[in-house]
Every structure is written in structure tokens, then in C-alpha cells.
Figure: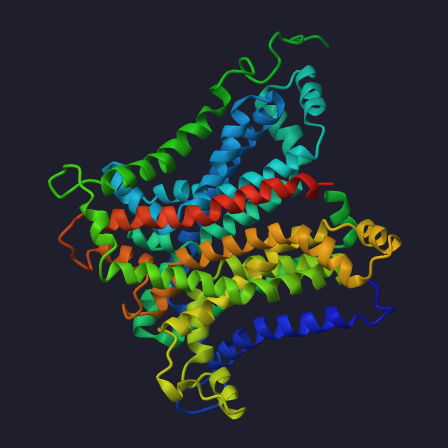
Length: 256
Length: 293
């Protein structure tokens, strides 16, 4: 970081943007730690939220649903994309285009379509959600992996692995995945974040997960719901910022 | 060492022209995406007696559903228009003057703000801009009384304010790649040829960035137009918005004479959204030709 010369436009930008982000967030946080009648501040809303039985129930549920989504994404996309890159198939254009299509369809419309299309045994199982989340995250996940695979000598690597006797499965898991690990990490982070916060599809298909539970809480205990929302926003915000700040520059260059 | 030898056909399973390796993807994508969307379109043309009709679409453009479209389009356009230029300027200064660590930090923070928003965002603003909220009180102290004329977060203006909070970060995310691919050499070349700063921007900088700017605007419009979660949490049916109307019809909270009205509303939404997202994707593709080094 060059601190030598004063960078006025950047500083002004950061101050304004920082104020835009932090003022509402900080203001909401202040509200959420107010103590009702006694005045002063306390964490009772947060304690209430964390002690709620449903808090951990829905958090765990959302977490495993998102983990399954990540798994589906990797299992489907990594082999498909590897094949696309190696074979130069004519299907490439088609699949590239298809992967962007979910961006075009508003989630509300997609949810209506899902509700009137799937047979009963799918609609009655919560396992439909990870597959739908997979579709919603597809445009981002596909691009992240695509960029990762473009950047490596895929042909050489896979031919070397195959010549050494590895099966395609082994070649992908042991050789290709580790080489594109930063793209894989980005894909995991993107897909997981999108799934764990997904609301529209989930609520319109009448499922309950962590984000939809919060809206029920709000009907009885608005302060509790605000506290939960602050946790849902602040925790990933702080974690991601810390990771970005603490990762040494050198490592970033290597992984890129 | 030649335990297995190199088998013939070591190229990816079966021949390259084969569709087989792409089959799992195509099957899942077809079943979980193409099938529901096609069925949605098909059913939107069905009457209650399962005969072909355009009646659902007719109703979709009548009261109160027409005002839903007008409001949703207005919300998308306004939230995009207000954030596009500030977002572009912020992206410019962050991309051109920030250290790489700063850029990474801001881009991941923006990712959280733009994507995980939804419901938590709604409650965050309920706290910040409620009557007792710190921000409301602070604004009051400087002479802006939000609640002087029947303001509430559950109104069109209220929603617009909340939408800005995820639209600005989104603008910075989608516009930054265009900025970072502006090359320093171009400024230098222009200067060497005798151009001043203004001329550089008018003749080179702005024309180069304009397509990306328009593309970003279109994406922002689509995002504001189809947003559901935030509006659903903040309003109680007082602001007619198409996504909320569809949600109401789907839940059976609102009854309509035509069973498939919600599907027709969904199809119209897809058409409007496609009018923005498809040009966005085409522009991005065109621009990518010079943006990739």
C-alpha cells in the first residue's frame, strides 16, 4: 500500500461510501442493543435470539441445505466444464448460454413454475431446494469455474494424469481440483452464501429455513428479529472483510 | 510401469462430439429449470377449463395488476438511476487508486451487501429508520423530519431508500471490471498526441465505458424490478408490486377468478426482465473482447 501521497479522491469516495454502508448498519445495531424500559444498553435481544430453540434448528437446517447445494454444484459442474474445455464440443456455446439463463428469469416467476411442475414426491421433499438453489447460483458458479479452468494448462495436466494411469475421476479429484482450488473456493463461497440467504424461492414453495423463520419471529418479537437480522448481516460482513484484509498479498498473487 | 497402458480413446469418455458427458448437467438443468419455465409459459395460456385463452394476459394488464407493473418498473428504473452514477464514480476511484487489498476487501463486502440482503436488510432499515431509530433521530436533529408527512418504510419511497442499499454495491461490483480494463497506455497515448484530460474522457474514456455503464444499469433495473424479499418484509399489501402480487396469488391470499392469472403475471415479468438482462449479457460479451488482456 502506498501511503506516500495523499489520495484525496479515494479518501472522499471511501468516506462517503463508508458512511452509506455503516450509518444504517450502526444505527440498526444501536437500536437492537437498547434496553426497553430501564434504558441503557444490553445484549438481551441477542441472547433471546440465540437461546430460541428454533434459532439453532433453522441455522443447522439452512447450513446443511447450503452444503448439499455446494456439493451438487461441484459434482455436476467440475466434470462438465472439464469436458467442455477438453473436447471443444459444439455443445460449449449452448451450455455457456444455458448457464446464464437463470439470470433472465425473475425468481418469483421461477418459483411459480416450480410449484406447478414438479411431481408430488419432489415437492414434498426438502431436497428439492438444493437443486433449485443450484440453478439460482449457476450463472455465478459456472463463470467462476470457467475462469479457473481457462487459466490452467488443462490438456497437459489431464493427459499426464491419464498417461500415468489415473481414471477420469481420479484425474479430476487429485489433479485438476487442487490446481483450480482458488476458483473452487470462490464457487463454494458464492454458492453457499446465495443458498443460505435465499428467501424468495424458499418461502414461495412453503419451506422454512433460517431466512424465512426470521419473518415469523418478527410477528411476535420485532426486536428479536432485528437482532437476528443483524447477526445474519454482520457476521458474514465482518468475517469476509477480515479474511480479505488478513490474506497476505503474496498468497493472492500465487492463487490467481 | 505399463500396467494398463494408454488406452485408446483417452480423450474424455466416449468421443468429443458425444453429448454423454454433458448429460448429467443437461438433465438436471432441463428438469429443474427448463421444464418449470416452459410449463409456466404453457399454463399461462390456459383457462380454468384447460382450454387455450389470452384472458389471463388480458386481466394481467387491467387494474390492479397494471399498476403493479408500473410500480415495479418505476422502482427498478429509479433505484438504478439513482445509484448508477455514484456507483460508477466510486468504482472508478476504488479501482484506479485503491491498493489491491482495499479493492478485494471492498468487493467482498459489496458481495455480502448485494446478495445476502433481502430480509435482514429490511429489518435493519426498520431499526435504523423506524420512528425511534437512531438515523431518524439524527436526521431530525439536522432538521429533516422523515415522519412529518406520513412516511413509512412500507411505502414506495421507503422501499426505494432500502433498495439503494443493495443497488449501489451491485453497481460497484458489475462496473468495476470495465474500469480495471482501461489501460494506462491509452491515457499516455492520448496525452502524447496532445489531448488534455477532458478530451481524453470525452473521446476515449467515456465512449469506452458507456456500453458497460448501460449494461450495468440494465442489470440494476432487472434486480430492482424483480426483488421480492425486501418488499415482502416491509409492505403489507399497500404498494402494488408485481412480485408481491404473484406471491399473493400463489399463496392463495388473494383470490382471482382466473386460476392461472399468477402464471401470466410471471410470464410478463420474464419478458420485461429479459428485455433488460439479454441486452446486458450481449453487451458484456461484446465488451469482453477488449476487456480481457
